[in-house]
Picture (cartoon, rainbow, N blue to C red):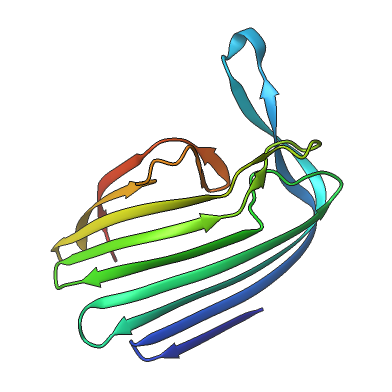
Amino acid sequence: GKLDIRGGDIFTLKNSVVVKDTDNFYNYYNYFAGAAVNGNVLSAHVIEATTVNAKSDASLSVLDSGFRIVAGYEYQWFSASENITYHPCHQASAGLEYGLKQWNIEWSNRYSSSVYTDVKSGKKLSRSVVGLVGVQMRLVGGLFSYLRVENIYNNRYYLLEGYPKAGITVLAGVGILF
């Protein structure tokens, strides 16, 4: 189910809870490819799992200053025959956004609880806090350019779409809004 509350342009609160019982859940395990590939490679296999995902996001505009305070929390619960890998049970985020006529600036942080790295053992990657900064400039009409730096604290790893990723990532580009 979903519940969205909006207080004009000042306040938003979005909540959702999704329960799934599936026989098509992709779980990841370390595949040691031997001589063909150096290091660990992730591979996926399909399992039966029941998942519960509860998510809440909020934002608050600070008067007419252009500042927005954003925060979120996500809880995931899994029931399966093996450990569910690379999915934290808890994630929390907080950040500041500042918008002008042509510019948007963002700074945010996301906490992720520890994650299993093996389907059978209790081996885990430790919890982490990942920061990001971003700048977006509106050029003409719906055309904009952006620069975003992820993992600004250079944690040993962070999760990107459910996959562990190391190092600082810099993204830049041009986009069009229709």
